[in-house]
Picture (cartoon, rainbow, N blue to C red):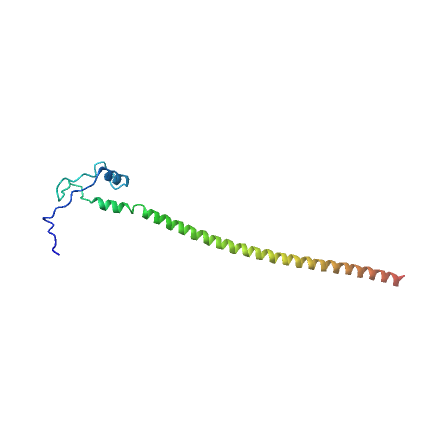
Length: 143
């Protein structure tokens, strides 16, 4: 296939409209009121100083991706927050299980202490009875 000589090829006239220019302004691509001008009928545009030739399709394709970076950044922040919350939930669950285990242990110790206290009371009573009996026995012998 033969290469087309760009020096002799004719370019299609620009189809940019006021609606397209308003979109560029809305998207923040063109902020100055006269930052965009329509090309003339020439095939090879010669823009005024400070202007650059652009194609409408480039803006249309590029504008499809405006906001995706912010969306992806927010999505990453949300994922990071979700991971942090999941980690805190896991730590909270571990702390809850440990607290439940500590409660069970404390109840066992309290029950053992009650049993021991009942045993001590029983021993005190038996000691008191033995002392009383001994006192009575001594009184009987002495009399």
